[in-house]
Image (cartoon, rainbow, N blue to C red; front, side):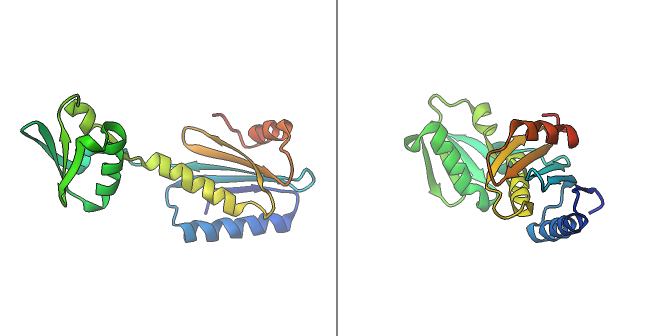
Length: 186
């Protein structure tokens, strides 16, 4: 990866971190990374990692995944891609309750119209790639950090994640120093 920056006093540590990051990126199939910045201080000891990502796709809504029509006193959602049906059902049950949402056929979901605005229903987000990318980036950072560094401080920015980890309690000064060193602004 060309945008991989490792800062560590130990030259062997720099080479090891580079190798680990390259392997994990291939293994985890993370493609939309912009840069990975690692700053490790073995004397403190702490590890920090800032992972930046490129723009992600827009969230998928029910409107993107279905065709809707009114059938009597219900909205009929005809779902185009079956793989999203379980998540659509979960979201609709959470919002409108199980009594108001049913699945009479494999690709049809019926929602009772009473108290339901069609625009709000169709605008319900089902898949948000930005949430998924944050989870994957934190998972990547956790794989990169040294074994035994179980105390973690995680912050999320607009298009990046910052992880500071240590074997012991993380000193707020470390976090401040890391933010300056890795040019973090949340």
